[in-house]
Length: 141
Image (tube, rainbow, N blue to C red):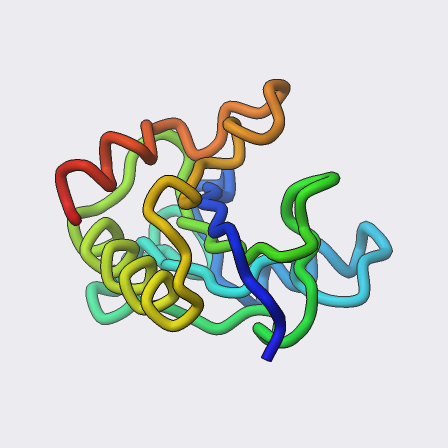
């Protein structure tokens, strides 16, 4: 098993999408695969008008967890990346799923809560995930 010491939370900066869509976007950029290890859907998979309640909060696998991600420059080694579909607003189902996946990954890899961070904590040029991950952890854990 790959050594993991950090979990990074991202947002897609798109109001719609899923792991397949992001995989296509990333491959178009020349990457070998999707950069994130998991994607949390908001119910809008293929456009911003076709909401599917069964997809809201759905966690889709991304890059295999035994492979280093491509989600935060200079900090991919030893990290896992999870991306919430959305720009500035996320659904309650997404936050419930984010809590679930963070708890599972933190327990599985013995990652301290202080090492669960937003992308912007590692790259000051990024705004993502547009909410304070430390506050989310404080309330949910």
